[in-house]
Length: 207
Image 1: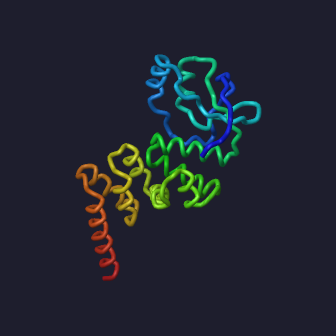
Image 2: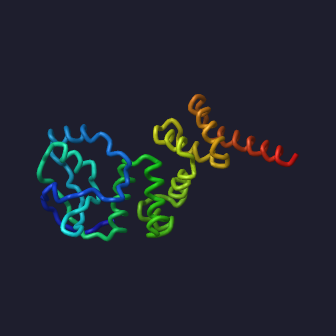
Image 3: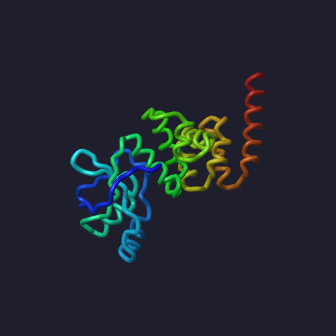
């Protein structure tokens, strides 16, 4: 996904973060600031003109680190992009560099497909270089109750294991999540337990 543009140093005060920021938390900004102070900014941030200022397309952490250092100017790659193109560029950057957790990816993918209506799952998958199955499964994570999502973010439950719990109701998923944290299970083991649980519930309903 290549877009022509040009390099220019801009005043930090003229640059703002996007409204639809992909990441919930810009972590390790202080460490990045230390690295930039020692080695300089190795890669310009990508921005697009927005009204009379500029909006970050890729490089929110770098901009935050530069602000932490109280630097007045920053090297930018300025590109003319539509809202959709800017979102796609940001997605590609974050997915390729694995800077988002799986829930952030799920929310970002869902915004592209559902909230913004910019394209279907197949188009999004093609844009970011992933399979349709990958995109679909990420979006399905949003069906998890908030408590289970938090455990996925904390990496105490893997996305693949969490998805196996979806046939259960929310209360059962939360209880099962607590059990999995204490007793790590494989995806196949979780699938087997969920299948048995659903079968037993169906038998009780039919008696």
